Image (cartoon, rainbow, N blue to C red; front, top):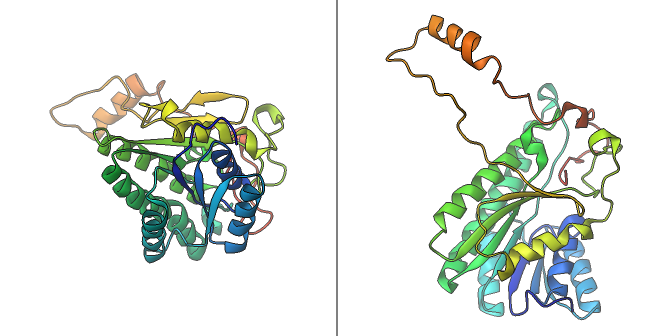
Length: 298
């Protein structure tokens, strides 16, 4: 199976019942990993597991909900007791939808935060704890370019911005623990892609999630060491780094600021340095369509 770069490793992939998650799980298994295929849709998790096994891979299905603390604890305790522990985690499970601020619904917002943020935190905390005990491991968080700002996707953008921040913080926490944490912003057409969405200039998006999977396998493998704390954007053809937020220059200092000082500062210094609002406004279709659809893979 594959090139064997993950032989001997146990990898948990959340949200692996379909789309990108399924592609990640299949590719990791083809590279020799024992894969725990997690999805709250237990039937979909079983289907991915069966696909992997049918071509000679090793996989186990999990229907645990990543937003349920007790379920996540049970999942990782089972991985520890039955599989010997976790070497890699792909925090892929996520939900998304489109809505402008005046269209938001509390229940949808809460569910997105629970799955995308709390789910990432819970799974990561358990996995990293186990990895530290084992002396190393790799966590791959799945983010989104939407976190840079896209019309009508504020809640999803907020959750994926949180995932990026978590990545940077965990990477710092684990610098001397042998655990690496990176973030991937994948681009591929899946069930979460809004109808009619296109790439820059109207370009067609990658319609094969499998083309993105090699990057995830590489990050899970020892071949990517010692890289940590990075966000990579990949569509199966184009690979680039997303720069981290940082304090800009120049820095203006005053012993004490007045409103008039602020007016002068922006008129004379900062007016030409202001950042664009969001990320390429031409990429942002009107939200809508099927309920629950989002911009997850973009």
